[in-house]
Length: 166
Image 1 (tube, helix red, strand yellow):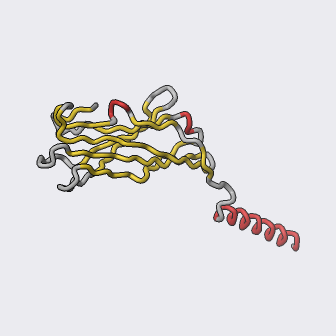
Image 2 (tube, rainbow, N blue to C red):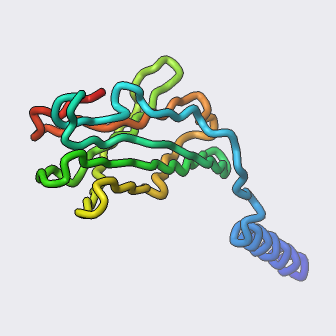
């Protein structure tokens, strides 16, 4: 009878010990790892409205930065993106938002995931340039995520006949 209580007590201690390790983050800690390649898609890095030599406004992706964390068999990429918008003719009303996309390609360059989102710009009369930064987008994949390539680009506005991707 005493042996059953001892076994039960030891089992209970082992379970509590494992639960304690997990709650303290000791069982599977996060660690920084190399990120997959990430880059701005060259032909979608900029959108210009008007004629290229005489633009009305322009939106571009200025830079990307990433940090990758692995935990167990999952990797999370925190991707930061800096967008710039410039209004060349301040008196003209223009759209104040842009859409961008993030695409994930496998090692054979097949698109395995893509999502779009919008970014708003506020132009002030005293300053036609506005810079907005999306602090983070999180992308999760299997821990072997370095086999992927992440592309970021701007989408051509559907309602802008004169918008030109450059």
